[in-house]
Image 1: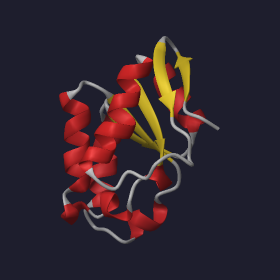
Image 2: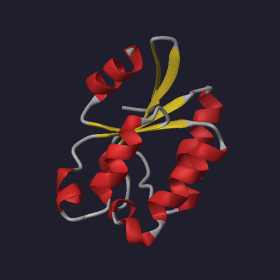
Image 3: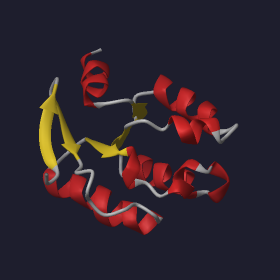
Length: 122
């Protein structure tokens, strides 16, 4: 399935294909996510969790911080969609990041697209 632009409660959301390019570097995020958002006029990008390289979930690598900063710089919202429980169990810092991110409105970690739609409705 290709990336798909949908609207939830007036917000254009780019739902990325699970089989898309891996996001293993900051440049990958710019090329494959930020660029796609601007091309499609999306405000929020929903990316399957498995598209992110494992280093994204290892906060000591700095990859998550760099990617999340790019989203902030370009004023885009990000939803990481899917089960990341094994990454949460392997890290003492990641659960804190997820908890704090989910309190805000720009970066969310959600289990599925239904949860994302429900959060956008609130």
